[in-house]
Length: 262
Ligand SMILES: [Zn+2]
Image (cartoon, rainbow, N blue to C red; front, side, top):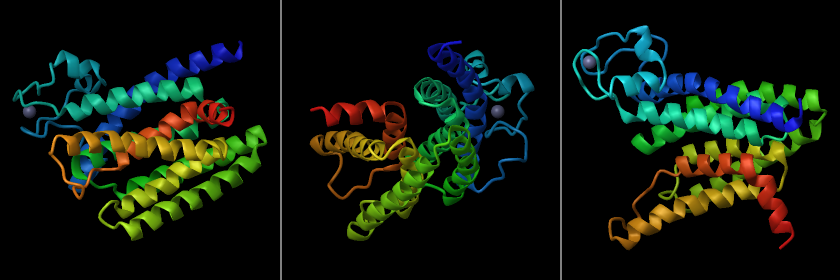
């Protein structure tokens, strides 16, 4: 099997895994902000409390067949559920297709799943629960150490650690300088993103950070232009940091290479 074929196969498999992981991610994004357990009770309708049939738990398909409504009380199923499932599947496939080494894929998929969940929560509630950031890092880090061992890229691990510390420090400085512009959750998340970008190469890190700020700047400027926001109104930065990070995981080396040749 050629390298291209193995990446294509990995992308298809990753999309399927992404649907299942995304389904769990949607549950986490729903329950954690409310302080509920992610284990018990089993999935149920938020309105009438009726437990879901096992077939109603099938990602995406169930949402479409039920037309986005509860089978019992017809209450709307939050569109967040569908969006988180689709986003996780699509981004899993993209990362599997683009990641230079498939040994590192499990670790990066854990990070992507964490980023999708955190983005959904930050978008809705304007916060990034520390427990989810730490849990993502705790699961993904040993997988990255394993990938470093399998590929012999121990140096990449060191670059990742330095990049994590550097991103944490830069965002911490912004947090101290402009306390209203950024939450400490963003600082923590920047450390996580920096680490996994750094493993791919030092030049990938600035791509992720720059793209994050560009992505965040566009809606902020639109809101300002429409007079719907003042310069002080906070926007959740987490989804943009996550977006810039996933972009750089997939295309950071390409962009950095192009920059170097301008
Ligand atoms: Zn119901």
